[in-house]
Length: 90
Image 1 (spheres, one colour):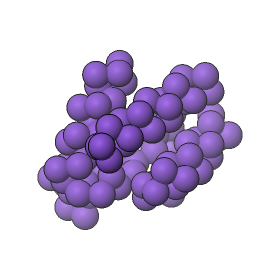
Image 2 (image 1 turned 90 degrees about the vertical axis):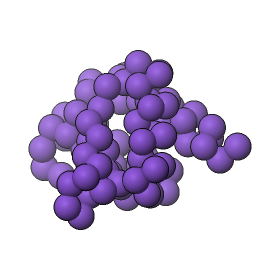
Image 3 (image 1 turned 45 degrees about the vertical axis):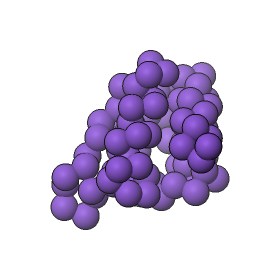
Image 4 (image 1 turned 45 degrees about the horizontal axis):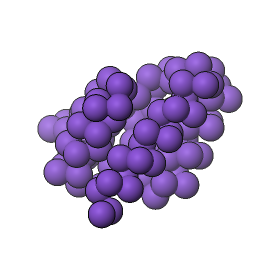
């Protein structure tokens, strides 16, 4: 789980997102803005990923939280996130 969490944190940084350091079984990351956060959440949901939208929490208005899954699912999550972010750039 630790290796997968580290992979996810590195991958989120590579996507220009801001993950928070974690020693837990989930990763929280800043998506950029509250409106962008909702779009990322919706895009991931459409792709079959259920994550937690932490919007509205103090200092985390643009945060999403994902549970650290098994490695193959983590790779799928990162691909789905890349696709979602690409859609938002278009």
